[in-house]
Image 1 (cartoon, one colour):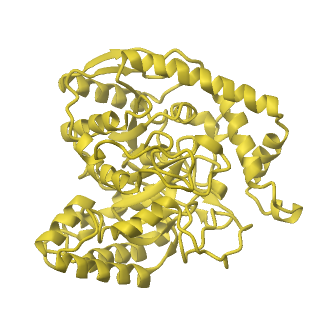
Image 2 (cartoon, one colour):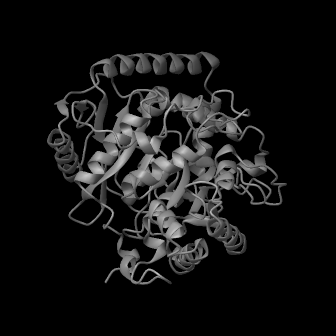
Length: 480
């Protein structure tokens, strides 16, 4: 018997920590379950499992239980604040949270604060009555696609603790995959919600840039998105609905969407024009990943979509991305003393030094390449509603390394060729689980839409989820 079917105060053999956000809200409404029950179940799992995973850098049981108790009173009175009222959620430790330190995986930030401000996402979670249980780990200043840092050490993958969960939202993905809260709020500047979602076998969407407001502005500029992470598409859509919309502190935030994303996810995909690119024309893909994603693409034909194998037609933009990303990293640390810089992750120091050498002309040249890529993808989506690719070309590898052993590349971008291009273009892009390797490791497929077509990406994600459900696939450490 799996842990997901083991115990509950009033629901027989169902563990509240295994329930989706939607299921929890329905159980609260029926009074089969209290938000306090759910919070206790999640906190209990964190206590038992997180010493192995290291997904959380901060857990606050007292505050979480107090918030859950307040939510229980609201549900009892029929005065709940929204569909996330009483639902446990984690927040990546790069987003400001009032009364909790935001240390961003670095030894160079003063833990004593003061910490008086919420970023827009956490602020809206509080407004919705969500139960924030803690903050999840990130590599230092969220600079790379795996999750280890001088401050918090190595975060591990619940499918195999010897392996990385990916990054930079690796703690968030590991937590969701292991049942340590059904929802997580992450960030994505080059793949940082999609990479760990693929390695950990969960769902995520990086929405169109500006869909979720960001404050303070990221040093990485308009590459950086905020995104929901969950086990189900509907849960992610609910979280997106809760935190999207303008905030006066973010001048680039988009206007409120016309429709709820939870409703947009219900749309049919029959008749959609879908492009499938196995390698974007330049990436090398592990055979098991390639086979799983190709089979997943065929599902959309079964669902009535028109699927054509075709590449978008651009070369790998990694050099331009490096200029933008490394310059952003240099901006992150420009205020540090020499002594503080010595305490940084050595890889981060290297990219900061490189980024500091770029000129304004270098940066504008990379920006020009970014604009060209955006225009190309805009034209591409005149012909195709969606683009399917692997999320990553490889399965998860050894934890604590920036690149797999034996890799010819030194930087994390050498094994993430499918993710960073769509930060450059600011398009919505999701990662959906599509199977396991022979070694039992998750494989993800990326679904990319035109800018502002978040609803179409969610609809395709949910249609695939219904056709090929993945919710019963829990990682080994969650089955004990």
